[in-house]
Image (cartoon, rainbow, N blue to C red; front, side):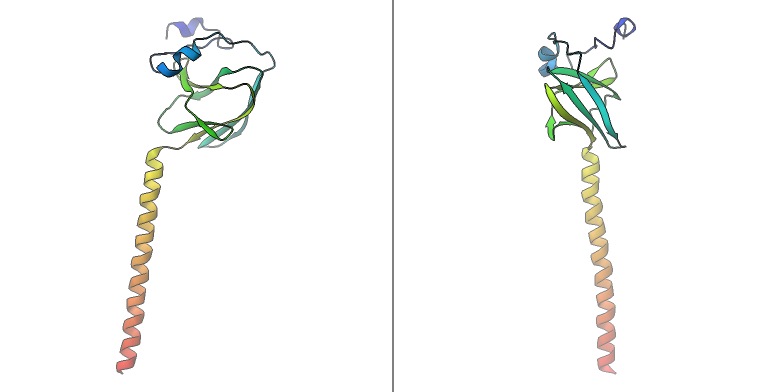
Amino acid sequence: MNVLGKLNSKKEAVLNIKDFADLGKVLLTTYDVDSSCTVQMTSYDVNSITYESNSKVEAPAIFSEIYYPEGWNCYIDGEKTDKIFRANYILRGALVPAGKHKIEWKFEPKSFSSGSVISKFGSISLFLLVLSSFLVVIFKSIKSQKIS
């Protein structure tokens, strides 16, 4: 936190490499500067944010959204990447390869997918219960007409 007040956020980022040991050595390297590099938001939705990047060199990109690892996944050109990290204490970042890329952040928490499965099972069960009740009523109605 003490470093953030002295930080030139256009050229520097603060990382806690203890949290990202596998990326620590990669992120601690000095990166070539590409003055023509761009990262531009192309769409923003509640559960997804899409960017387009263009750079001549591989470099970390810091996004102005809060780092929340429980559910947010990053995809570069449709492939999920594990090269994501927390930067400047609260923001999220990703290591972006050189070239033109589509970067998508999607909110895909496990609780949502498991809840969706449970909800579908419940809906199907309710539908089958209503259908079976309806068929029993029809069967009893037909049976009572044959007896009369």
